[in-house]
Structure formats: structure tokens, C-alpha cells
Amino acid sequence: MKKQVKNNIYWVGKIDWELREFHGADYSIHNGSSQNAYLVQEEKTFLVDTVWEPHKNEFLDNLKKEIDLKDLDFIVINHGEVDHSGALPALLEEVPGLPIYCTQAAVKSLTGMYHHPEWNYNVVKTGDSIDIGNGKSLVFVEMKMLHWPDSMATFMTGDNVLFSNDAFGQHYAVEELFNDKADQCSMDEEALKYYANILTPYSSFAKRKLKEIGDLNLTFDIIAPSHGAIWRDNPTQIIEKYIAWADAYKEDQITVIYDTMWDGTKKLAHKLAKEIREKSPDTVVKVYNISLYDKNDIITEVFKSKAIAVGSPTVGNALLSSVSGWLAFLHEMKFKDKKAGVFGCYGWSGEGNKKLREILTNSGFEVVDEEVKSLYNPTDEIDVQIEALAESLVKA
Ligand code: FEO
Image 1 (cartoon, rainbow, N blue to C red):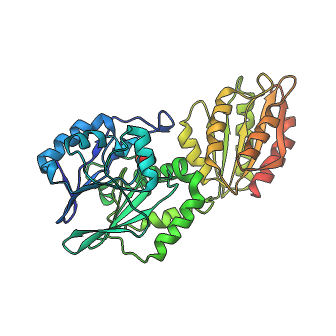
Image 2 (cartoon, rainbow, N blue to C red; image 1 turned 30 degrees about the horizontal axis):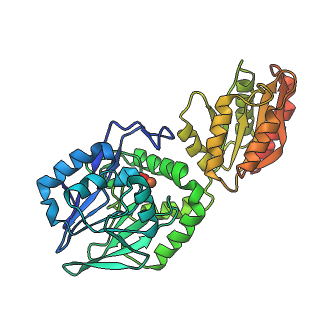
Image 3 (cartoon, protein in one colour; image 1 turned 30 degrees about the vertical axis):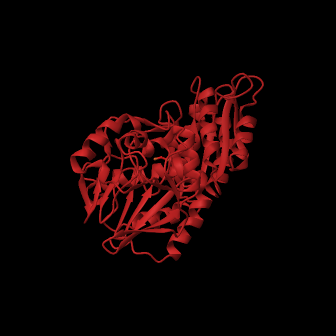
């Protein structure tokens, strides 16, 4: 059943409480999610985006209860990724030739995904518009690399609604749809996790695009993303957050991240956290064992941090695989303007810290010279190294 968003704009998507992973297993879902698709019934009747392929039948069945599919004038596809375009092939089987408005890059991604170059593509660029009747129009804004080359947002004049697709979204299920109905704390956390884990690598693009959108001097009554809560209460709050997050965001937080074989490196992690707390009582200090915590949640904590410390024992001249694997994920994020320190225990050759230093440097961190390296199980003699590393991180 359609749910009204504003005037003749309706939500016709999927609230997905069962979803536990996204992007394969690369993104954990703790509180459900949604694929928000929209039906607009002005003089023109059209859809903005669809849902993921497993929900295509439910999507089409629900839509048919609201309209005769043959009454659709066109569909806007803001982004070709399958969570938004998955029902498109089934829809086009029912209404062949339906015009698709999308970017040039989306023609490429949709063709790559579904192998239908004959679909009725209508390529749009930033500033192009379509009259939808009743004195309203759609204005398109390319959102290149937020987070795909094909990404786009669509602004509907008259109602001042921005269909922003992935930007400003959260993987968060809200049956009542709107941000004022959501648990504020959970929603804010999910929005932050979404930015930290999906958009951080594209922050330079986000920064430019947010300025461009600001320069348009548009009024936003509603920001309607394709995942999670729809922003209708103070909708620009999420734009303001994105402006801060896109600018090498950091808080007064230091996060200690490690894994351990026989608890030696764990002891170092907690000694370091204690020392940081003593040196800088106002700094938020958090400690995560990579094997015990969700990898995306740790990335979110890194996003908030001004500095991190990463620890692993030396294993096979290298690192524990849990640490190496998580560091490969960290590398993807292209964090900027953050410091890092390294620590770990070793038994004979001790290459762990060198490996950590290399990977963190290649991942964009400024790795401080001070480090903690303990031959076998640490004793109090290690405290001199702990103090030096803590001092250096606190100064970040
Ligand atoms: Fe929600 Fe990039 O797809």
C-alpha cells in the first residue's frame, strides 16, 4: 500500500526488516533497512527508483493496487545499483518502452547489469528539467561518485522535495517513514555509519557537490533518500551533517584497535588506553578487539577519531589475518588527516609493527614514530614505550 510523503508524492518501496548484510557481506545491518521507491501522481504519473530484485513481485503487486501500470508516463532511475533498479526489468516487461530518465553513466551501469541496450533511455544532466504538470517540474542534479559514477538526485519543484537516492540515507527501518518518527539516537548513528562506511572514500566529491547544491539556493521541504528515514523535520540537518562529515571529520576521540593470540597484545591495548585516559581525561578512548566487534562499527569509530592505534602480534612474519583483513577494509576508506600508532607482541623476528606501519601509511594515516613492541608477554618495562606512544597520539 502506498504511503503519502507529501501531496501527490507517495512511498511505494520495501521496508526490509530481515536484511542483515548489504554489499555482499561488506556492510552489517543491525536495525533493518529500506529501499525507498516513490510514486508521483501529478498530471504526469511516474516512479522514482524501484526496489531490489528479490522484492520485485511484492513491489509490482502493490503498485498495481494503486495504478494501472500503463498509466505510467516514465520512471526516473537515480542510480543503477541493483537495490534501486532490481525491479526495473520486471516493470519493463509489463510496460515495454517506458521512458527511463537517468544519467549517461546509468545507461552504462543498467546495460551492464541487465543487458537491454534497447530500453528507452532518456539521458539527463545537471540542470535539465521535465514539466510534470500542475505547475511543477523535476530538475536533475548529477551526483557523480556519491557513490557511483551514475548517481543522480532529482528535485521536484512546487513541493520542494529532493529525491536524493543513496546520499543522506541510512540502513535503518522506519515503518512510519519519517525522521521525526524514528528513534533519534539510532537514526543518527545509522546515518553516521552509512556515511563513514560508504561515502568516506568520496568525501572530496561530496564536499564539492554539497557546495554546488548550497549555491542553488533551493528550499528543501523534504529530503527523500532511497534508504531509511525520510527527512521532513528540519530536513537540512542531514545536509549540515554531511558538510561536517565530508571535511576530514574528527572528534576528540582516540580508538585502540587490536587482535591478540595469547593476550599479550591485548594487555598492550588496555595499557595504552589507560595511559591515554590519564594523559588526556577529556579525550574519548575506546578499545575494540577486531575479532569480537563488527568491522563496520569499528570503521565508524575510526571515522570519529583524531587518532587510532592498531595492534597485532607478529605471526608468520606478518599480522593476524583478522587484523590484515580489517586493514584492507580500512585502506578502502581513504581517511584523511588522522594520526595512527602501532603496537604488538612478538617472539623472534617481530615484523608486525613494520607491516602495520606500512599499511596504515598507505591508507592515508600519519603514523607516529613512537611505537610499542614487546618481546613475548609485556612486563612493566614496556610502560616507557606505552607512555611515549600515548603522548604522541594525545597531541594529534
Ligand atoms: Fe543503495 Fe548505491 O545503492
